[in-house]
Length: 547
Image (cartoon, rainbow, N blue to C red; front, side):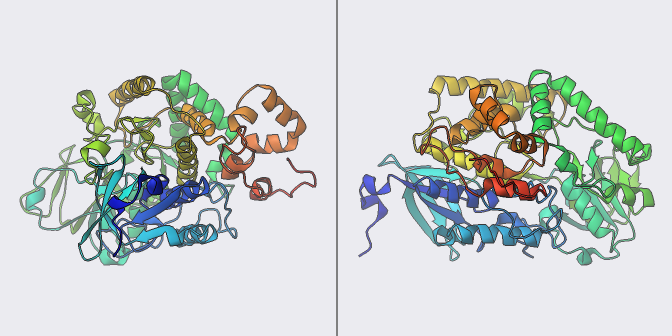
């Protein structure tokens, strides 16, 4: 007879960790936790790993479309210790990213520890032990409860579609969908399509529909910043964001946030005016603050607007009783609409969290009642990661913005830090200090939404990376970001490598380059890191390498 987990000794469960969600972040977390010595198991509701990067025709499941490409260059869109097997081109396709994640999982032998096709029904504190009860739902709808000592939630914020309520929607006779259900452009051939919301998703869908629709209408409430992936046939735009440049910008933003935002917005708006030749009637400028909403990465939107294939409209205020007409904030109307696609984003789905696991239960009335919060719930998490009630056993990645433009880097570094903290190699502060940090960050976010809407809660990216580096024990704070003896010794003894790290492409491998200052009580170093850094920058590997 099989022994129930509830009957097993607590010592047998001491190192058992559940990872909820096996997209790119969850897979990296599973690897880092197992590398740190935990008996980590990953759970995923889909029958595959990779999350949204795996295309599916299921209209209830978020996925890329077949033509999706990354918004980050391949040189920066990598795990910290696993380079792309071959150069995929500047911006990999979704299929290439999905294969890359599969190859990562195979290389580190993670698949035997992945349990797929299991939905998460509930996570709550066990009533009879110092453990977590994780209730799973299998494909037949049967519930299975297992117990874990620790839980890391990596299901991400893109899990619950946001559909705004607009007057008259209930009478609209034409098709209304959320972007989650958009899969094939050919399904909308020759239709009159209205997109509501202009972000990365809205821009990508507009570009895809332009091949099959005579014209596309895009409704947006405000302006936006647009950045091309590649400028005038040169290197990818994000290659200019070197580590030295980023450190300067983040420091400026830390001490003079409004001035830093003004400078960044001014530079990008001038580029849109004079380089892209953005026209006033497109209503793209003035744009939102870059600190609140990231720019849209799109190489086609401006040319489509210029050609008239895409038409810019103000925000939708209502749908008419005739069932085929939309009215906009300037009182203009659009008739004979065949399909409306809401590109209005996603929220974190916290419906499976019991009270003991739910960081959204702390009262945040100022946030909840502010129109610029967009009805987005606010999670109270230390450093955007740790449960305040159970920091030694419950953490989340993805509820708060990461420090990097690369989701792979964000998930890899954050889970590496969490693994080292849970191993006892880096101590979290006392509860009072964590509460103080959460209060200060809450006030900072309230100040941010006084200026404009935001799509995700965040924190100081510079402070966040510094915290993660220290917790993971990767040596970056000591050798690259400080002015102590370790930094001077590395710079003077490895000048070419130092210059490449600071002024070359900011590759993820730097996080695995150095031995941990804590020795074995830090994340594992990757011996191939330096070679990967040189090669990713298009440089030959020097005979004398850093040791």
